[in-house]
Length: 454
Image (cartoon, rainbow, N blue to C red):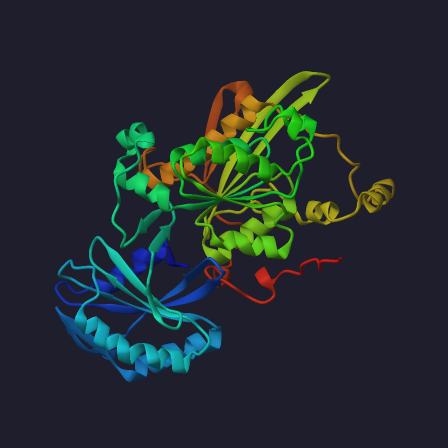
């Protein structure tokens, strides 16, 4: 089982400021965290950084520190009240990121205290040098963190595992980005929600980039009208699940990417829960309820989501506009509700049966059922490529530090690309910091889910 710790970029900055506030001596702080528990991964997701008051340090030296029992008692009470886990983080100012023998001895006293005062939760520890991070989780036994991941304008990941030599298949891109990025791609678990015109080229590109693990989510079966833009499909595949077609195609490439498939929509609770295992998600669905679910996953689990859309304005075979969009969803970034990309009313209408929607349309309470939208492979593929480029920028910074946008808009008919970044709208869910990093809740995502019937 993978064991991971997830932080926001702003949280890491705040943590480093606390831990390295006095040169030459160790510093410490607490992190309050949500949990994500699945059969395949355990994550602690940082919800808040909590300073330790100067008077609560009994000792701060170059090779050790100690804090008061009162400080421990206060953080334990707060964590128990909030239903959160605790990570104790401290610095090694001499630049050694590994846990020391002294750390081992201190944890033998600290962790039983936290487990007794905040039972039923996992807890952890972090040690930071100026450049590196190492972590441990107690679930309840101690396990090393496979990765400590930081998400924000840049995506960074620290792992105790050494980077092995990249396979020769990836030589040309190692020449572009270096072996460390190739190693990071190999460790990534990426989810794709929707395997149609944008999702299928995404899957192919990520596989050929060397992403180590892909999870594919789509409950739709291939229609003959999909073959014009779904990679790996043939006319003879009509009626098969899109995710199964994609897996069969990607496995044949032979690059070693692990492919998991979920032939259900993420509007099914069990399927939505599986998305939590992913490090990054690409949203390639044209429905608004799944997009709303992805917003919640981005906020509560600090999983970056790249949401894609393609719109062709065409009447009587004449195109008046072709638009592609890639929107990055993260805590602190404007969501799809803020941007007017989705709405509660459309989600309500989508949930209606065709019969109910037709009835409400006649009464003027819902729009008429729409005809299938136009779709052309060159536009869907180009938008998918733009989304992959956004991921690569967050991993490598190749577009430059000044590139701070969270949305890319492509006007194909005008040969024009624009970017933007806006603040969350007041009172929108994406600006509610109380949700950030909260992790698992009951009910899941605080939503009402449909009950399965046999």
